[in-house]
Length: 272
Image 1 (spheres, helix red, strand yellow):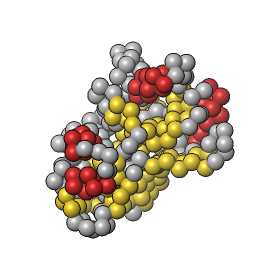
Image 2 (tube, helix red, strand yellow; image 1 turned 30 degrees about the vertical axis):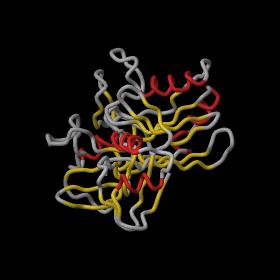
Image 3 (cartoon, rainbow, N blue to C red; image 1 turned 90 degrees about the vertical axis):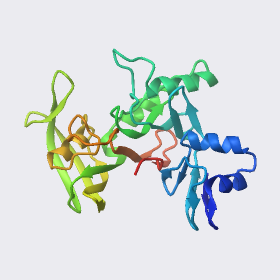
Image 4 (cartoon, rainbow, N blue to C red; image 1 turned 45 degrees about the vertical axis):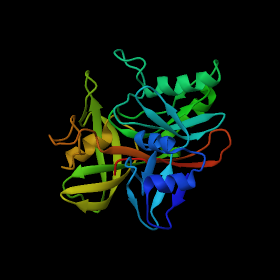
């Protein structure tokens, strides 16, 4: 739900006036859980000052786990699309089986239907936040994954150290070693990342990024390779004060594998 502010107000008072079915305790709970944003940034302060024409948005459809809040961005009989928090694995590993996005979304579906199935279409790094698509049956998964790079457009936002060019296309060959670490090598597979500079301030650049391939860690690796390490990237970047990776998958565009309808999904609740 989106609201446009017409008069100066405090956030709690504004929400109480517009969400008449919610108590003040309900409002405070929404704020503390990070479900309210002002102009695209999560805001948790009840007395936050709103100005005329500010945009207040409330996530009213989400999955709540013990530790994470997972916004549901789209759901129908065939697909469910969610926004993954930073720090959460996409799928299970040998060391971790349940603290994963797959497990949380699957459990949510099984609470509604014990026979529900779930199939992941693509993944994000553990430290990357943003949009992930799941299919509810194997046919939908296979159809959507066919010609994935040609039929699906994926966009990210990243905050990086140093000043970037106004725009650039990064092309490298990327390989992986036995430990799963990616590196640039003439023996690797082609990786293509495109970016445009949105803003530059205090020695940091905000980038709008699209990818033409889906190699492991390709955005992080290719940006670091041109002296634009992402803030908080402890694997490929530089030592800095940031506690999380400033990389967010904020938009995905594709044709629905069953209805053939064009789908354009955005995840506006990010840290930038």
